[in-house]
Image (cartoon, rainbow, N blue to C red):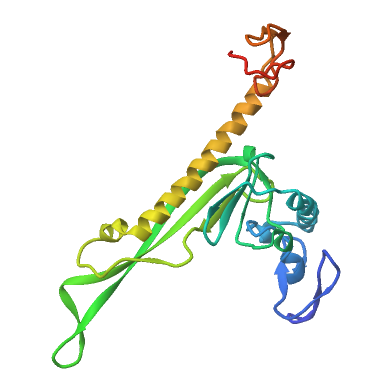
Length: 250
């Protein structure tokens, strides 16, 4: 078989055109099937045909989870973290119509951590000399640029992190002869920093809440006297009386 002979996709059996092959560990994948995989999946080359079939089955089932997802809180600008606080689930996506993109729906309990990274770069500003050449200022002057990245670490079968850029456009400092810390004092920088911290705090909180609920669910319940109605009751998962629905102080 020649180098440029057409191959068939081992998932859909369709013909793969020139430059359209996505190589698997033990087979071939067409670009159309590759588009159906999770956008956070990055281990295709070491995946088998069976692995891809299993993930595509998960992705098909994920469509149902998307249709029942109800956003109660939105964090972010371009790429957003959407929370369904009632179902304890979240989505990270830039899509306007969720059904069209089929973003992965994750449980709060799958969050294992969250971190914020700020990447900066600089461009030196030059001036024209008397003979028309570009020369440096003394001391040198720079414009600094900043990008905020949020990484959500997750326990998931097909990926272990969700990394996205928070700002739509690079945050730009004024021209300065000082260090990059100058630009970090701007309103745009501080606004993005506050948003990143809000996302981190929200995900850290839902992670802890999910873990507390798991621990509480495994703790044996004991009968107590309700201080409100006087009934002997076993508190529910929210620590409320089964008769009057009043909160019981543990």
